[in-house]
Length: 203
Image (cartoon, rainbow, N blue to C red; front, side, top):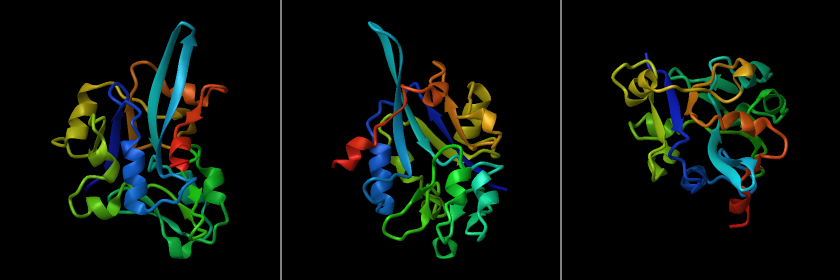
């Protein structure tokens, strides 16, 4: 049985936004919203300041709060593990948005339904990598079957220390991070979180 997930190596993300642009192009995501973006956080005191780039997207959680919160059953889990929203069943009650601890669900201003990352299930069903993975120039994203011991992601996770964003939410995310500088917890700290998708809104 296949269980898809993603590993993001923060050692090699350069904040170029190729992932965000590829995602917007793949799904014609309207300006002002995003399925996949890059946050940056700054740590330290001048002159010893470090900037960390952190790609964020739907975590396709094993215990997905959005799935449990949706009263219309518009949110479902595919056999390969992706949590997706069926647009035709969504009445935009926003319960899923309130339930998601990662702020990964947005209102599509064109369809007036909830929307989010699907891990490009239409591409992966054809054996093609998600658009964000394919576009990344530093190969910081690894996508694959978490339960296949021969897959690149499974082998990498066997040999590398990984973590998840907001482990205290107990959602069992399937997006993992290599985070040796402990940048992920900084996202939740007031005053250091910045969405770099603001640059895309102006383009």
